[in-house]
Image (cartoon, rainbow, N blue to C red; front, side, top):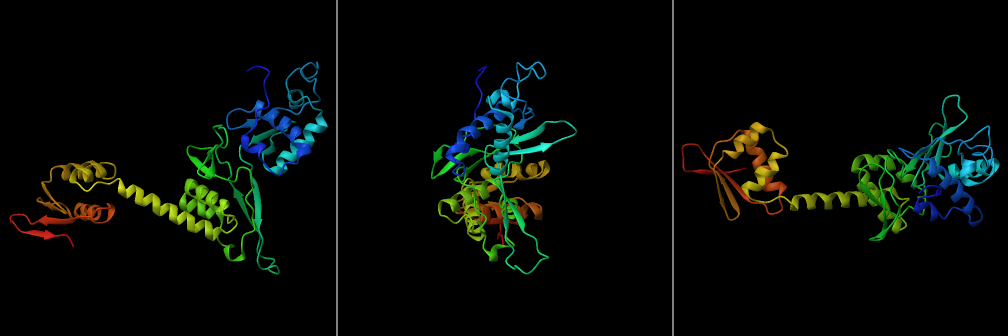
Length: 309
């Protein structure tokens, strides 16, 4: 709606680091920036000279000052404060006077892991980026309470659970975890699993112990694998459907021509099949599914059957 600006992320309003006396001005300045934002949550607007920039014959356009109705010095002051809090990331590009400002829906914070050996000057502190926005192409309203956490929109394609929208995760990592980093966990288990694990650890006050977060990541991954396995059926038709998403067209054609005899708790393969497919069949019915069954392969030209080893 024309003339209505100053929208801000819900997580920003719950940031406990913001002092009451500065909150109103920060909301105004941050909201003015969001009113200029476009694709990728980028703001290119200039600070301006003052609240009357749109009527100023030398400017004649909307600026952060005119949108916020604040003076230039005030806008600059709270712009610096927003940067300190991790809600924006200004970047000077080219020779222009304006900054390119990246706006975040979740506060970004770089923290350092202290070197456990104080006298070792060769070692450098390792930065950890918490909830870094890697692809802020989509906007979303923040935070609705669900199952002890806040549902927030991930800036790519998937949702993550986070209880850290109103709290910045601390960096008091124990010295024994100095080789274990948040980035390594995210790369190993994926964004969704890592973020959900960190949220669970935060509710228990253990977000600074990365080994504790690692344990949660492993548990969630195991639960996910069990859930996937539970979806796999134990019939030959279920196996064919499973194979269509993983095997080549020629392999599928071979499998579809195979004659099978299904019995309670066992499966008899009546045709000769390549050794590679034989191993896949055996692995599926004895490892991939929850209700495992015995597999028998009938030897060509005989009525004898051989149990898969």
